[in-house]
Image 1 (cartoon, rainbow, N blue to C red):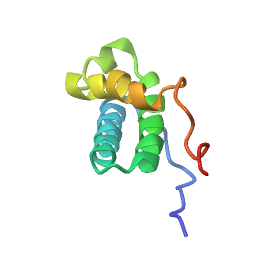
Image 2 (cartoon, one colour):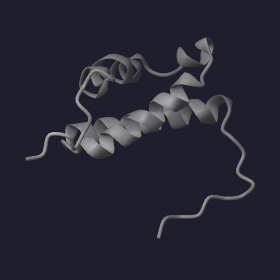
Image 3 (cartoon, helix red, strand yellow):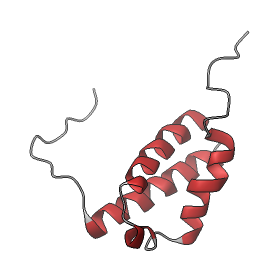
Image 4 (cartoon, rainbow, N blue to C red):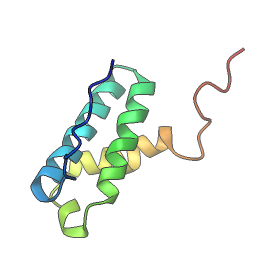
Length: 90
């Protein structure tokens, strides 16, 4: 049974949001390095959604190594032009 979300949970802002983005990217990278593509895809999508909500100044606070992986490296494998998972089973 999944954990329940708190009813009064406030959306993250500022430093907490930046920290969450970095954490999600690191988790996605660890899944990537472990060849767990399904979990990596889910974490990457969550990280990308949070990253898109950051302002330009806040995005600069995310370490460059993480930004590069999120935007370029992972886009090569998980981008919209790629075949969706589970479609080519025989």
